[in-house]
Image 1 (cartoon, rainbow over the protein chains, first blue to last red):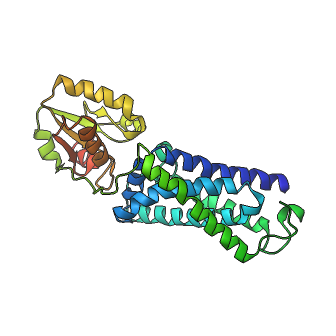
Image 2 (image 1 turned 135 degrees about the vertical axis):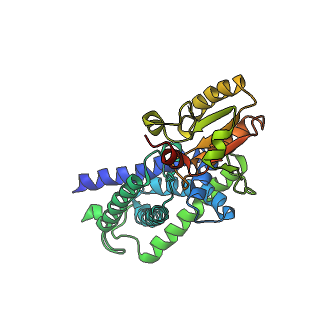
Image 3 (image 1 turned 30 degrees about the vertical axis):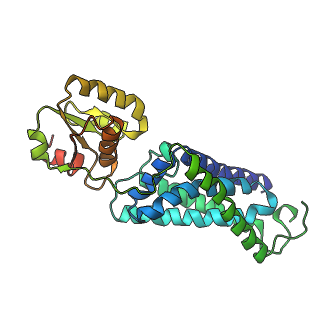
Amino acid sequence: MNRLTWILRLLAGGIFLVAGVLKVLDPARFAADIDHFRLLKYFAVAPLALYLPWLEIICGLAVFAGAWRRSALGLLLALTIVFIAAIISAWMRGLDIRCGCFGAASTAPLAYDLLFDVVLGGVLFWLLRVEGRPGSPPADEV
Amino acid sequence: MSSTTNPSCAAICRQAALLLALALVPALLTAWLHPKRPAWNWTRPTVTELVLADAERLTPVIWVDARPDEEYAAQHVPGALSLNEDHWDELFSRFLAAWEKQPDARVVVYCDSQRCDASRDVAVRIRHESGLQIRNVFVLQGGWDAWLEVHKP
């Protein structure tokens, strides 16, 4: 169980770390990717394109830091739920776009991204549960 | 740091707020220093759309396929050049070489359908990266779907 938890933490944290770094390389492109969803006015798109990748990187790193893990996992789960909602919304409106989840490396159709995010959300949710309830003994000591 | 219990709800919320605030610092530096930072005053660029019948009347014309490589490889408008953002540098130099042979040509960019943005993005980028030398760039209304509807195999 501990080994599985460790591997899943590594995967979840690593995925957000890589996704954040790839987007930080070209924030203008990420802004265009967000704009393609046609959900936000552009005045909100540019700040989001600058901020979101760093939030992913910082939370991705914090997943590996014991004391910060729960808050990082919670934020990443919230982000993933927002991503899933945005992808479903684009899908329902028939938009033919890429999700931009991994910056320039995003080439898969939206359906694959949706599946990926649902699985990732499941993993994050499971990791949060493994962490135990706030105020209870930490998972590693259970 | 050793602890005997998990952080409380309040501590977790404080940490989450701190993580949210911490991300602001590099984001602000990115906004200030990154060479590829998005423009604050950006507005969605307008590109003239052409219906297929009008696009087919243009001469000389360079057709540009903005779809992914595999879709271009499967089928494309006869004579169209592939130019997508996945391999931009390599494909754009090929496109420029073709355009230099007929600099008076109009350029018509298409992607999958009416609902894709790739053709608009590629059209804007062609104009921008050619230093506005290539001005007659259009987007095919309805994209590849519109082409297929008229030229059913």
